[in-house]
Length: 161
Image (tube, rainbow, N blue to C red; front, side, top):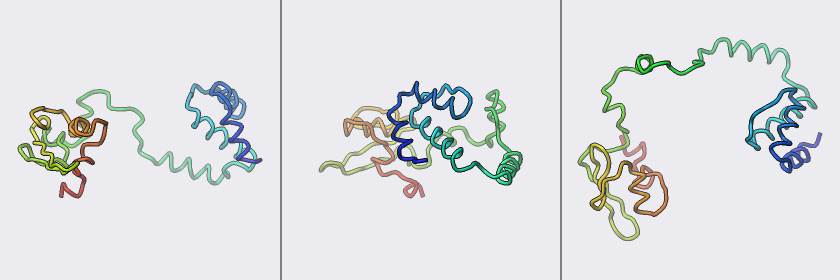
């Protein structure tokens, strides 16, 4: 089996054709429409058929590990059960990002020859007379394009310490 040729042939196919190919190699239909995912799965299956699948010993070990895993299979059913999962803390403190300074603090950042100053508010950020909901909104207003506000203002994990 020449993997490069197989991948090249699959990349030329439409998603509809890939679904048919998937059904042929796996013996079951798929509703997936993600072309790269379909290609990866089909190539994996073709390779496992050509070169052999997992050994029985490896399958048994994987089954043991899966049985030992304590995995949640569904989300909490109510707000009350969700609260029971996370530890009880001050609600305002838990929502506040620890990378941010306290409200009232001024964040300064040199940008294109000028020093920009943003005031941290309890609910948002003040910049040039406007109030923004997030640092990313402030950074977007400054640059004219979307960017991560924490990154733009250099507020990483190191600055929180």
